[in-house]
Amino acid sequence: MSNWLITNADIVNEGRRFHADVRVRGGRIEAIAPSLSAKPDERVFDARGRLLVPGMIDDQVHFREPGLEQKGDFHTESRAAVAGGVTSFFEMPNSKPTTTTAGALADKHARAAQKSLANYAFYFGATNDNLEEIKALDPRRACGIKVFMGASTGNMLVDNPATLDGIFAAAAVPIVTHCEDTPTIEINLAAERLRYGDDIPVERHPYIRSREACIKSTLLALQLARRHDARLHVLHISTAEELALFEPGPIEGKRITAETCVHFLHFSEADYATKGNLIKCNPAIKAASDRAAIIDALKTGRIDVLATDHAPHTLEEKQQSYEKAPSGLPLVQFVLQCALERWFDGQLPIELIVEKTAHASAKLFGVRDRGFIREGYCADLTMIDLQAPQTVRREDVISKCGWSPFEGYTFRSSIAATWVNGHLAWNDGKLDDAQLGQRLEFNR
Image 1 (cartoon, rainbow, N blue to C red):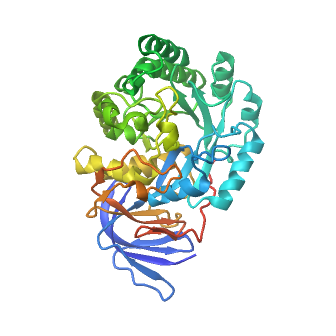
Image 2 (cartoon, one colour):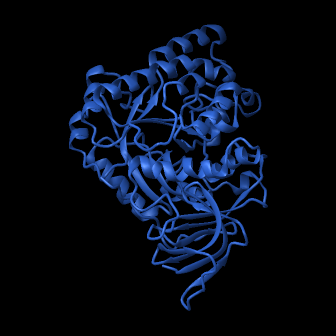
Image 3 (tube, helix red, strand yellow):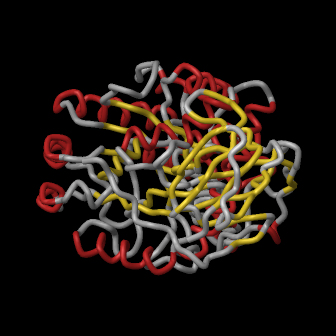
């Protein structure tokens, strides 16, 4: 494990932007101060005024292992994440088999320990028939319980009212929900089939996976959470109407929180004309007015966390017809650059972007010793060059799927370096996997 002295950094952390040096020893941050002197056993990294932020903690990814490795796996997707400044991820349970038993959860931990360049944690998935497993779950072994209150993979749609009530009553960890009402979606899809047959245009996606479907399901989740005083985190908010359901202000003390994803800040329904199925995702990317409202909600605190919902599919799958093409976008490699476009445009403060991508997930889930640039904390650090634009090219994509919805777009920043537990895992466009990531621990 290398010892580092990062000099001349422009640090953004806990609402402040300031210049300082950072000493990293034994994988942790030992000192943060101006003009630190290098010790004989330290390697010096001159930041030259570039931005140094805590590594992103992405609270929602699908890395596809086990069972769907043709799309991605812990090896490939964690490397894409580190290249994008993501140092820790929480991975979803809809793999094959689903992560809905203690054995499946243990298997994922074992796989990641052998492959993941980033730090990792896993959600335990809820089904209509695994309530006893949820009650027996050790709260230190999973970041949260994932409830698909809408269509999902295999047996993971939870639509039994008694089961939902039992989950919200029994959960000892945060409950995170995908909120889309399946009966509403099925009615909408049937109407589109009558109109278009087998050739439904992808532009109809936000009307099939409609705002009404989102709102109805989110209202149900909030009702259950309030009935049981459960800790609820609603994922990937995509509509302006849902935002009024959440309280503004800082995350501290909230029992109900909300997350949105970076693609909802970047794309709108106008982009289906050129991107097609490449931006098909659930919930759907909707109107430009929704995008503006979501950006405003990040500023007011109605949305607490910014994530990716990284979900790689092969290009061949995406090139199928609308109904056959799967939903999901590969996003971890460019998430921070995409978020920073909102800063370049004057829409979001840079301090707020750091809060929503690093601090907030650490607070919400109780991640131990990560998510901040603090003395004694793990040295998960991302260096961003605000003076080095990057045009996204297909040949630069690290995710196994080999494509990006951002291809051809020029971001006005680039990820210069990423440290994971003090290991320089990404530097000057090159990965170093000599040291793998660690299993995340939680203060529970």
